[in-house]
Amino acid sequence: MRPAHFLAASFFLAVATSPAIADANGMMLAQSCAGCHGQDGAGQGAVPDIRGYDREAFMRIWEGFRTDERPATIMNRIAPGFTEAEVAALADYFSSLE
Amino acid sequence: MTHLTRRAFGALLGAGAATLAAPGLLRAQTSGRLVIIGGGFGGASAARFARIHYPDVDVTLVEPQTSFVTCPYGNLILGGKRQLGDISHSYDGLRARGAEVIHDRATEIDAEGHRVALAGGQVLDYDKLIVSPGIGLRWNAIEGYDEAASEVFPHAWWGGDGSQITLLRAQLEALPEGGIVGLAIPDNPFRCPPGPYERISMIAHHLKQANPTAKILAFDAKEGFSKQGLFQDAWEELYGDMIEWVPGNADGRIVRVDVENKLFISEFGEEHRVDVGNVIPPQYAASIVRDAGLANDTGWVPVDSRSFEAAAARDIHVIGDANIAPPMPKSGYVANSTAKTAVTAALADMTGRPAWDDPVYFNTCYSHAGDNYAFSVAAVFRATDDGFANTPDSGGVSPRGPLSELARTRRLEARYADAWYDSITADMFS
Ligand SMILES: Cc1cc2nc3c(=O)[nH]c(=O)nc-3n(C[C@H](O)[C@H](O)[C@H](O)COP(=O)(O)OP(=O)(O)OC[C@H]3O[C@@H](n4cnc5c(N)ncnc54)[C@H](O)[C@@H]3O)c2cc1C
Image 1: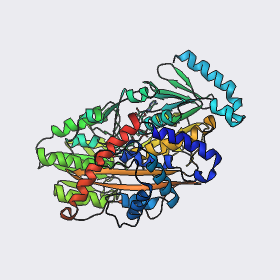
Image 2: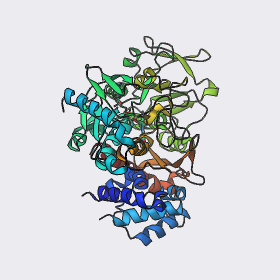
Image 3: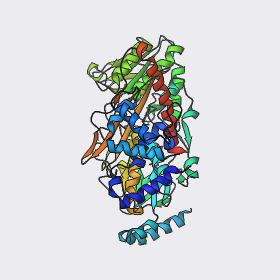
Image 4: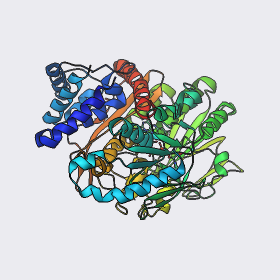
């Protein structure tokens, strides 16, 4: 499976023409997640698979973590560290993975 | 690829360097050579990321060990929860991705000539160099603690060939009944701020079963440490009075060791006899970057916060423990996270693809304190014009509280820690 690679390539192409995307780079941001959530968000052991997550649901759940309304061990500490644009870029990225 | 063709290829690139100024189309067809020194958390992550995302770039990784033994989860060997094989990783996965892996030691960097000399005599030309060689131990900074002394009082603070952690484990198994395990812990900055305290916990975990009247004396040069409240709660809950932590202001700084008589000697001359001694000495960047003149007088390497290019040399990017990046900790996760940004920055000119202007760096460090008992610290960092910064109102440590209330959280974090280990090592070696 090479969706990340494919996306990476298309990201770079897109960026060349559209500077707006450059401020939140989903593929690069998602690298932070790979240390626990596995390759391309595929999940690892007890840590959930976040590939192909519905974009709106991803952002809603993230917001729940950010406001501490959704119970978590660690995501409630991580979520407030990312801007809205970054969360949207992450949601775009993970929702696009199979 | 043979040595000769490699060099000829390098010469070609030199001639082609002028095309860098040419329009994007031309640039996109130009492949170049990335050499990486050190196949640990920073270097292996960089090699894998570069092969996946920049398949047109030649990647050569130089690492003396044929199997990488991680420091993370090494403490679990002491606790009897893991074996050496569980924390050893082959470079076959990186080879399968097309990286050339050379098992040798880099002995010299010629920044001007863009060349790296290896102990075996080979010389590698590079367009961009990423260096992630980890730490060097300051032998004799604690008087009497040199490489020979580490065969008696192991440090077990680098993976190497696994012999240090194996030695410490064997010594713990042979500890006389009711014996004393001493640790000497350094001042900041050092590799893995919570590492010594996870180690204390895992040693206690082993002793509680194997030698319950034994004692752990942890001498610290500092007055406080990472996740201190969480660790001290766990020690009290799980190990009673087995562990005594002696801070710097209670004469905890060990300044001399006597391996013959098995003594730790403190700043104010107090002699402590130990049966097993684990000395974690003061550290600096590994010798390859210090010898190359990349470090400043702290012994660590100043770098640009967006590219990790060394302040002292163009086209050399230094990542991992060897660089200066507070408030980011010297952790495997930070080495992995920054490796990817460094690759993107290093290869931008060569490939015509943009660097990441607004990078986010990420860290989570889990610590195991006992069975089904772990906690974490997490942080999101950003580049600033003169360094790095925490992202406000984010990150932090697991909640404190009695085990009776937090058993589920501690158990979940222990499982997430295991998942972290598998994920991050896959992100380096698979
Ligand atoms: C007990 C302990 C527990 C830890 N637990 C955690 C944890 O849970 N989570 C976490 O994130 N971090 C943890 N760490 C920290 C982590 O191990 C380091 O931060 C990480 O290894 C740094 O990566 P690096 O690439 O800088 O160095 P390393 O991973 O040490 O890799 C450096 C590599 O470079 C090679 N090298 C050195 N010199 C040369 C040369 N001249 N030529 C060629 N190769 C060379 C070495 O052989 C080595 O393989 C722990 C550390 C310890 C000691």
